[in-house]
Length: 147
Image (cartoon, rainbow, N blue to C red; front, side, top):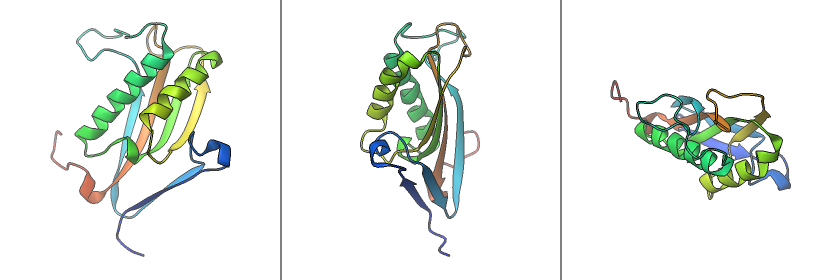
């Protein structure tokens, strides 16, 4: 087996190619990044300051933008995401959620994706929350302590 890092996405059906992969494999030396509970909170000092009230599309775009920024700090990007778990409050929000996610991942291999409709999220006014797992080759991650 080669020590080279390889990541591949495998869609489950033709209709799902742009939505999600049934399986994503990562082989070789690398680092796994786990991002949790990313939503539409402002990045200021005030906890629970939810941006874009009532707009799941804008909240989803903000959540994926924030995720991309976190990944970048660790030498990764949205193209390195292998798994998403997303939580939304209402099934009627799904078209706007999917539209925003497609825009965030346009031109990238689709990650595995699970979507749950639940009754509450971390803060009042939050409509969507995402957890992501990314995997990058050993040379792709900043190994500086505290970075």
